[in-house]
Image 1 (tube, rainbow, N blue to C red):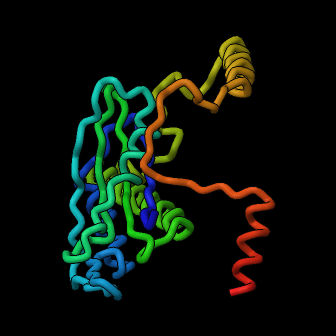
Image 2 (image 1 turned 180 degrees about the horizontal axis):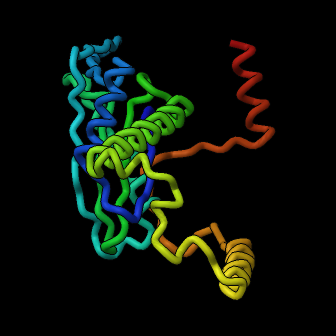
Length: 219
């Protein structure tokens, strides 16, 4: 489709300012991400801006969406802003979706594959997570006084929380065992919820493939 989409879900409302700072840092490190795609009938070219300029669009999902992550992935894949060859368009977009519940947010990144293919996009996502974590740590350091960050870990624990009675440790071990047993039975195949897509896929069997190869070799 010429479109690469990355989406990740969080139960904590993202800090839009911090996320936008991280995305613009990515644009600074990778100039192609701050480019605009210019196309005509036969060729295309990149117009690279000297400064990062990505902005995060915020949208709210309808209440009848049962699987926000899958819905957003399909929605973003079908959103082709590069189909008009007479205009210039950014190659990198970011959208924050608020889910139907109060504890679901999805961040979607949409890229033109001429600037970043699917494999590279996964590496880009890892780099983004690292930047977000670094910016979050800087925010925590600025939020708390320096003398608090230099304390020993024993001094940071509330009184009475450093030691657990034998009975409490036994209960914790039992909970860990039960939780791990429950997670092994999770079903990840979701065949009940409705699907929609404008992406067309052509599947060839072995005989069809042989005929295509025969025609190609003849030509």
